[in-house]
Length: 512
Image (tube, rainbow, N blue to C red; front, side, top):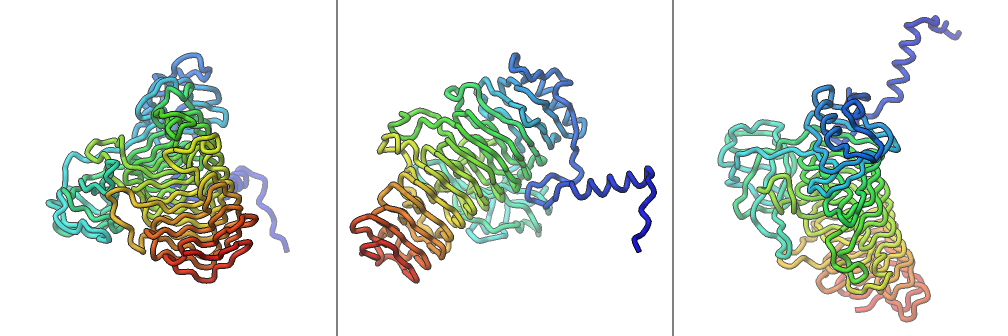
């Protein structure tokens, strides 16, 4: 028998509203950048502090005042629809944890501030802790000159003055949480990725509270006059960009440095690149979509990126929030799943710094646009995925129409320590279609090309294995090179271990 329904009463309406809220509410996963439980859904309205979304006057002061008010009134700021003119950086106070923009809200930058249009940052403690033992790769415990002031849950930035690539100022740098303190011994939440020999030291990292930015667009009014990122996040806990559009800039869409956790779901496009090749000259605009720098870690990135230089790249900390950690860091444990189109250079790129970067479920279409426009000496190739960092994983990626190689494992940077096999990239379930270069895959260092690699193209060589890549593994791949006279499936086969590789339309399955 069906039970009698609740009578139509205020109690019934309240119960129904509560159930609806529970079903519709956000799913919160700790540490992954989800909306924090209890986060405010309404907050300070920027219009109440003089912001006028009409693109007629500079709203920097009004928006700064609104942010200051939000810091004292629950931490949430709301921007209504329209275009807000900004001529400076909107520095987000630590206590502000959410900025909600309407779908048609635009923050339009007029100036060129070094920290971009929107910025949030933490800080480093003044004290320097010398590392006296344990500063070796794989170690989870270090001994310090003193552990005074440290406690379980503290965050440390650990770095040194070792140069691991001689053409850029790159030194080791790790952001680690303290999980135990015993005397002067400190146990870290994750092992170190690099050995630190020259003046190893540590600083307390005072991470800024999480910031969630939702909706709207951020752009520059004159990209040719813009040399700094649109959004800068340094030493922030679990930042979130949800449904944000970043466009019309002359540098990075987002520069994320030495942050922990978080997620980006973004649309980034039309960032000027005039550094790459003759097509654009030798300017200072570099147009990275998302630039991971310093010791940033554990960030998840999804969305669409097009008409930029690289959709994603790692880099050294050239302009950190604190000069003491300039050049230090290995961005690590990023999970990147992007729809990438029409990049001027490589679609997905990692520079020498970087550890355990995962490109999973991405698509890269028509990378290398400037090469197609006639340049032959760009600073970097017009390929799909370019790997220069250790421990990179490429899984479930489709690369279509690359002007150069679909996938390249690059030569070691000058002065860099050669990779071990354990650090070598892993490539699986990757499809390379319709490339325009000579080779679909080029290996200059060892890599494991696992099952599911499919080459379906009209290139001359399926996989090029150079002598510097000795020990490479190629297993379970299908290499199809249709309509190319004398096509070679695997060139340099003597340097690799081949297992279960099949060939379609290939004159010479292997050579050399």
